[in-house]
Image 1 (tube, rainbow, N blue to C red):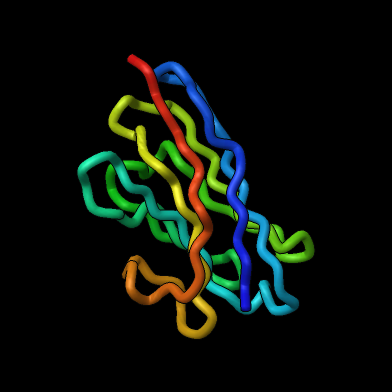
Image 2 (spheres, rainbow, N blue to C red; image 1 turned 90 degrees about the horizontal axis):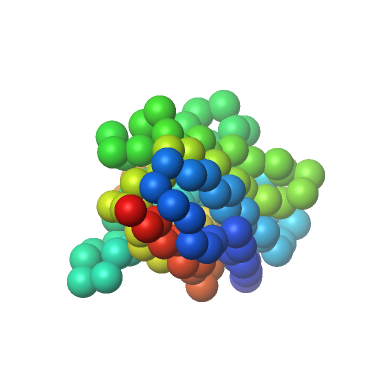
Length: 124
Protein backbone atom coordinates (compact mmCIF):
# COMPACT_ATOMS: atom_id res chain seq x y z
CA UNK A 1 0.00 0.00 0.00
CA UNK A 2 1.26 3.47 -0.91
CA UNK A 3 -0.01 6.67 0.65
CA UNK A 4 0.49 10.00 -1.08
CA UNK A 5 0.06 13.36 0.65
CA UNK A 6 0.14 16.58 -1.37
CA UNK A 7 0.91 20.02 0.02
CA UNK A 8 1.82 23.48 -1.20
CA UNK A 9 -1.37 24.60 -2.85
CA UNK A 10 -2.92 28.00 -2.28
CA UNK A 11 -4.08 31.27 -3.76
CA UNK A 12 -1.69 33.18 -6.00
CA UNK A 13 -1.97 36.04 -8.47
CA UNK A 14 -1.47 35.49 -12.17
CA UNK A 15 2.23 35.43 -12.99
CA UNK A 16 3.11 34.07 -9.59
CA UNK A 17 4.67 30.77 -8.54
CA UNK A 18 3.85 27.82 -6.32
CA UNK A 19 5.71 24.62 -5.49
CA UNK A 20 3.66 21.53 -4.83
CA UNK A 21 5.07 18.59 -2.90
CA UNK A 22 3.88 15.01 -2.69
CA UNK A 23 5.25 12.84 0.10
CA UNK A 24 4.96 9.09 -0.37
CA UNK A 25 5.02 6.24 2.09
CA UNK A 26 6.49 2.87 1.24
CA UNK A 27 9.99 1.54 0.87
CA UNK A 28 10.12 1.32 -2.90
CA UNK A 29 9.30 4.89 -3.92
CA UNK A 30 12.40 5.01 -6.10
CA UNK A 31 10.88 2.32 -8.32
CA UNK A 32 7.66 4.19 -9.04
CA UNK A 33 6.89 6.41 -11.97
CA UNK A 34 5.15 9.51 -10.61
CA UNK A 35 2.82 12.06 -12.11
CA UNK A 36 0.75 15.13 -11.43
CA UNK A 37 -2.82 15.50 -12.68
CA UNK A 38 -5.33 18.30 -12.17
CA UNK A 39 -9.08 18.70 -12.21
CA UNK A 40 -10.84 22.00 -12.70
CA UNK A 41 -14.50 22.49 -11.67
CA UNK A 42 -16.83 20.82 -14.13
CA UNK A 43 -13.98 19.25 -16.09
CA UNK A 44 -12.38 15.86 -16.28
CA UNK A 45 -9.11 15.13 -14.54
CA UNK A 46 -6.22 15.78 -16.91
CA UNK A 47 -2.54 14.90 -17.11
CA UNK A 48 -0.04 17.62 -16.22
CA UNK A 49 3.41 16.02 -15.92
CA UNK A 50 5.12 12.73 -15.24
CA UNK A 51 8.61 11.60 -14.27
CA UNK A 52 10.46 8.32 -14.54
CA UNK A 53 11.67 6.41 -11.48
CA UNK A 54 15.20 7.75 -12.01
CA UNK A 55 14.09 11.32 -12.59
CA UNK A 56 15.91 11.43 -15.92
CA UNK A 57 12.81 11.40 -18.11
CA UNK A 58 9.92 13.83 -17.86
CA UNK A 59 6.77 14.51 -19.88
CA UNK A 60 4.51 17.56 -19.85
CA UNK A 61 1.18 18.52 -21.31
CA UNK A 62 1.73 21.25 -23.90
CA UNK A 63 -0.11 23.90 -21.90
CA UNK A 64 2.46 23.85 -19.07
CA UNK A 65 5.69 23.29 -20.99
CA UNK A 66 8.26 25.93 -20.11
CA UNK A 67 6.32 26.99 -17.00
CA UNK A 68 6.10 23.85 -14.83
CA UNK A 69 8.89 21.52 -13.74
CA UNK A 70 8.43 18.10 -12.21
CA UNK A 71 11.23 16.64 -10.12
CA UNK A 72 11.77 14.04 -7.44
CA UNK A 73 13.97 13.33 -4.44
CA UNK A 74 14.05 9.57 -4.00
CA UNK A 75 15.82 9.52 -0.59
CA UNK A 76 13.03 11.78 0.69
CA UNK A 77 10.30 9.85 -1.15
CA UNK A 78 8.95 13.13 -2.49
CA UNK A 79 7.94 14.42 -5.89
CA UNK A 80 7.60 18.13 -6.65
CA UNK A 81 5.85 20.34 -9.15
CA UNK A 82 7.35 23.80 -9.52
CA UNK A 83 4.79 26.05 -11.17
CA UNK A 84 5.87 29.42 -12.55
CA UNK A 85 4.08 32.07 -14.60
CA UNK A 86 0.76 30.80 -13.34
CA UNK A 87 -2.40 31.61 -15.25
CA UNK A 88 -6.06 31.65 -14.15
CA UNK A 89 -6.65 28.59 -16.31
CA UNK A 90 -4.22 26.65 -14.09
CA UNK A 91 -6.80 26.84 -11.30
CA UNK A 92 -7.67 23.28 -10.26
CA UNK A 93 -7.23 20.61 -7.64
CA UNK A 94 -3.82 19.05 -8.24
CA UNK A 95 -3.28 15.34 -7.55
CA UNK A 96 -0.11 13.31 -7.46
CA UNK A 97 -0.18 9.70 -8.55
CA UNK A 98 2.13 6.69 -8.37
CA UNK A 99 2.53 3.90 -10.89
CA UNK A 100 3.92 0.81 -9.21
CA UNK A 101 4.97 -1.02 -12.36
CA UNK A 102 5.51 0.33 -15.83
CA UNK A 103 7.16 3.41 -17.28
CA UNK A 104 6.14 7.01 -16.76
CA UNK A 105 2.92 7.73 -18.60
CA UNK A 106 0.18 10.29 -19.15
CA UNK A 107 -2.62 7.75 -18.89
CA UNK A 108 -4.86 8.40 -15.92
CA UNK A 109 -5.88 4.75 -15.67
CA UNK A 110 -2.28 3.55 -15.53
CA UNK A 111 -1.63 4.94 -12.06
CA UNK A 112 -2.27 2.81 -9.02
CA UNK A 113 -2.29 5.23 -6.09
CA UNK A 114 -3.56 8.78 -5.71
CA UNK A 115 -3.26 11.54 -3.18
CA UNK A 116 -6.18 13.52 -1.81
CA UNK A 117 -5.38 16.61 -3.86
CA UNK A 118 -4.38 20.18 -3.12
CA UNK A 119 -6.23 23.26 -4.35
CA UNK A 120 -4.44 25.79 -6.56
CA UNK A 121 -6.28 29.01 -7.30
CA UNK A 122 -4.83 31.65 -9.63
CA UNK A 123 -6.51 35.05 -9.57
CA UNK A 124 -6.42 37.42 -12.52
